[in-house]
Length: 47
Image (cartoon, one colour):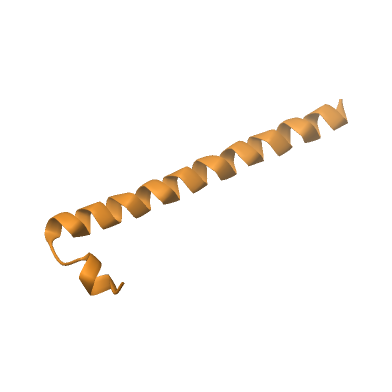
């Protein structure tokens, strides 16, 4: 599926971009949670 086909109408373009923003946001949240977890583990090791 080409990008032109996806972005055929303004509505489809909005759906496409919001969908990808949501995925990016979810990935960032997952990464932040992983960072917090590793930080907590490192602090426990130090104690």
